[in-house]
Every structure is written in structure tokens, then in C-alpha cells.
Length: 310
Image (tube, rainbow, N blue to C red; front, side):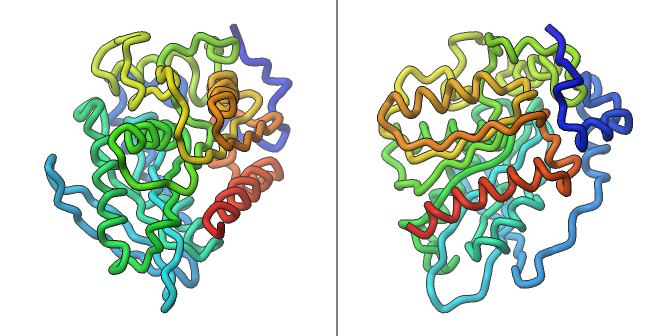
């Protein structure tokens, strides 16, 4: 099944010819080159009023690096664990969205530099995220965080990691979470949906996604994949934190994300769902100034701010 390019948002579709061809076929042979290419992208300007501090957390599996984006205040602020995207294969904790959230919502954000596949397949990255959220709660006073107002979230693979982390925290009796923020999350290793059949997507198509899942899961476990890795494999979605899920109408993940939101609601959870017309996977990151990208940004900031102020 092929993506109909006429359905793409016109502001976003103009950037397609300039996208690196490697994005359409990420595999074990070129993942290193893709990392170098993505790492060469210049970071956005730092927020005017947020401070950034690099920290190293000791964990049972080794040290984990985090970046803490904080605002000066005598009053404890809401906190957030931000998990960067990148198909579980690349990306950096020095993430513009972590900066944005700290700046716009005046909360303290911890962005975690979790271990990446294929060198470190699941559960390495998930355990790094789990250790980091526990560290945030245990060190809430030092971080000037209100431990009763901590959210977790991320985009793409980061959203998938956050969804799995929410399940992990529930099952392990971890701290209560104010919101799981799932921006077009990568949560289904099977892609057994109509949108999951897109083979010609210019950024993240079925072939690339299957390659990424194989590297992350260190094989092809299919329906037996851990729900902490692929959240759609979970049979029970009850008792989870409130969720905000968004996805583009032209995203490979569209149908699996919509179905996950539906299942969260059916299990008795609170879930807000937004589907953005004409948006392909990550299109808002490639052109953040586009109108549809701005709508997505305002939407998730509003949902996150509502829960963190509650």
C-alpha cells in the first residue's frame, strides 16, 4: 500500500525533495551514518530563561546521562521525564522539545540519554528511563520538583518508550504519573493496520520501521514482544496514567496510535486524542513553523500544562 502524496499538508510536502534518501531505508548497515547525519543538525536556540545542567546518574546497569532543564523558583515546580525520539536507534537528550516544555510551561524537565539499539537492545533503554524517573522522585527536593506532579513523555520512539514505561511503573508499583504524553508514538512492532502498510513513506515507512524494531528487539518476536517495548502488545491497559496521544493522518503509526487511545479509554482511562490532517511522521520537526506543526505544538502543551497544574 502506498501513501497518497496529494493528501499531505502542502506546507510540509515542499520539503520532501530535500530530505536525505537514507531516511527512507534505515537498516543495520547505515544506522551509523544516519546517526552522524542527525547529529550534524544544529540545535535550536536555548530558551532565554531556562538553565541547562548535565548530570550523570549511577544505576545498576551503569551510568546514565541526563540533561536537566530548570527554571529558578522558590516553589517546587512540576517535573517531566522527556524521552527523545529516533526509532530507538539514534537521537539525543539535548532535545529542543525538552527545552520548549521547560520554557513554555515553567516546569523542570529531565531529558534522558538512554542506551540505543542495536548495540543495546531492549530492555536497556527502558531500564534507563525507569531508573531516571525513580531518581527524579527520590531527588525531588534537590531538583525543585513536586513529586506529585511528574509527567513522562516523548515523540515517536520516545513516545513508545513512555507508553512502555507507564506499563512498567504500574506493574512494578512505581510512583504515580500525572500524564503520559505520547506524540505519534512508535508502539506496534507488527504494523497490522491499513496505515501500517505504507511502503513509500519518505521519512518512516514500513520497511524502515520493521528494520528498527528488529534492531531494538534483537530479533522478530512478533506477538510475543514485551509490552514494555511495544505497548500495543499489552492485554491490560487499566490502571494507567491519563494520556495525551497525537498522530498525523498520513503517519505509518496512525491507526495503531488511534486504536491504542481507544483501548485506553475502553479500559477506563482518561485519554485525549488528536489527529492532525496532512501530517506525516515527524513532519512537524522538519518544518516547525508550518501551521499544522504549530497546532500540534499548542495542542500538546495545553494538554500537558492542564495535567501538571492539576
